[in-house]
Structures are given as C-alpha cells and as structure tokens.
Length: 253
Image (cartoon, rainbow, N blue to C red; front, top):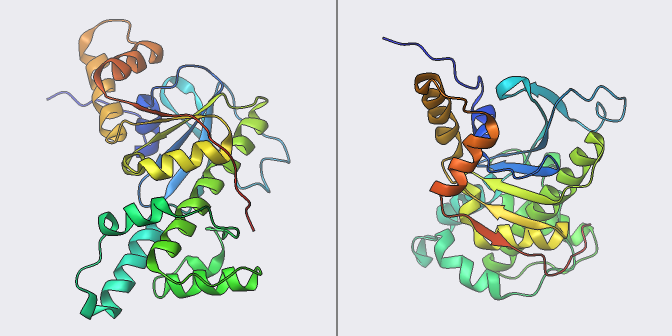
C-alpha cells in the first residue's frame, strides 16, 4: 500500500486546510485547547518572540507556523463537569441549556486571564473564576450563565490579543482571524472574538485537521499542481463558512 507523509502535526494539517485568503490572516485552531498563530515564509528568531511564548513549527510546503498554545474551551467543559457533579437536583446541565441566557447578558466589566495557573487543573473552576473576579474588584457572578459569559469573553479576548501579538512578531497587522476546529461551532465565541479583535472572524471548517490530512493525500495521488492556495480554495468551495463582523470591544482585567 502507499504510505503518504501528510503535514506532520495535527495543527499543521489544520492550518494547511484553514481557508486563509491573504498572507496577513491569523488563525485559531480551537478544540479543547487553542493554538493561535500566523503562517510565515521563515521563522521569527527575535528576542521578542521567545519571552512571549511563541514557537516556530514547520508547516506544509516548508511554511512556518508561528504559534502559541493557549487555554481554550476546556474551561467550559470542566465547569459543566463540576456543576453536574455538585448540582444533582437541577438535573443534567449542558452547554446548550446555558448558552441562550449567557448570550443575552451584558458584557462583564471584569474578565479573567484564562492562562492563569489557578485555571489549569481540574476541580472547582467556577469557584476560582468567581474568586478571580472578586480579587480584580468585580462583582461575584450569581449564576452559571454569568460564569459562562465571563469564560467566553475571556477566551475571545485571549484569542484576539495573541493573534495580534503573533501577527506583530511577523511584521504585520491581521486583516482577519480564521477560527477552525470544534470551537468554530460556537457563534457567541466567534462573535466575541471579532468584537475583541476589531477584525472579521471567519469560522470553519470544524474538522479542519482531517481536511488538511485528506487534501495532502489528494495532492499526492492526483499528480496535479495542488499548491496551498488551490487547496484552500477547494476548502472554501466545499465548506459552509460563517463570517462575523466586529461590533465593539470589552475590558480585560
């Protein structure tokens, strides 16, 4: 049988299929965790990049993925797990049951740093979030929906800040942020990321890693000139993307 070397890492496959339209687009590969970065022709080896926590990783066709691992929707899943373990009388708590009320809330005045060490381990994540808000001078959240809204807004602010940081290290300002992976299914997260960044967010594909893998196999078998631009055009033609224009910005504590 044929053995095909695809893009060597799952994130590399995801970025290969991310429907970037210009060289000035940033991406967020968002599943349980998040990888935020930009695609470049050469590594960034400056002193500014190292303490900022960015790494240079090889992508398809010798491109460089300047990226940073960030906290993602794990904060949501761990909060829901904790609520379900400690709120049996309320029945099963799901993200779907909380989102409508969370989306209707006003933007919180105080956000959290999702990458703070206190949020990295399993347990009472909602309690730690409430404590962080109080320490920052905010009002303690009174409902699960308020906690969820704080998480979503904080993740969006983190994605936006790191996307601009990566682009800045690459020598440009991002013209769009492509949010791919499971997190792209959250319309509220996508809209909030657009709001925080001030640039358009393009959501999808959801299964971007699998698409990147398959596209490289197609290229290997096809015998045609499948450059990355043509591969990404095929993705745009094949997947229903969603576009979120920025509405405003919030304040991160």
